[in-house]
Image (cartoon, rainbow, N blue to C red; front, side, top):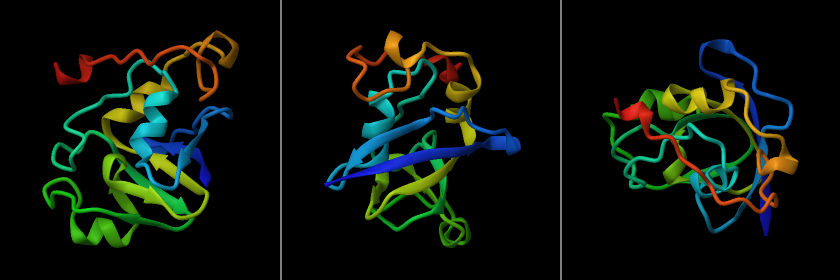
Length: 134
């Protein structure tokens, strides 16, 4: 079973593009689906819950998480729906707000779905911009 993840907002109150959504299987974490978007600028860090670059806030829907570093997500933030995409597994469709460094990937103009942009089925392999590390 897969779940639709809709990006409804970005850090600093910016609105996400209308077509910013993707599918995630129930057995995979959100970051897997985000990587399939193929958007330049989506930072991929440790993939283990320790670096914090993939921080999101779940606005609506049900999910569960695996262990995350408290340096990245405090217990207070966790009760407010914050989690790391690499440790967040959807139980239902989700609406999320992208926070932190990942938000830059959605504020830049990117390719259309027909050019391999925001569609999981677009067919282009992901291209990742690691400039966030500078």
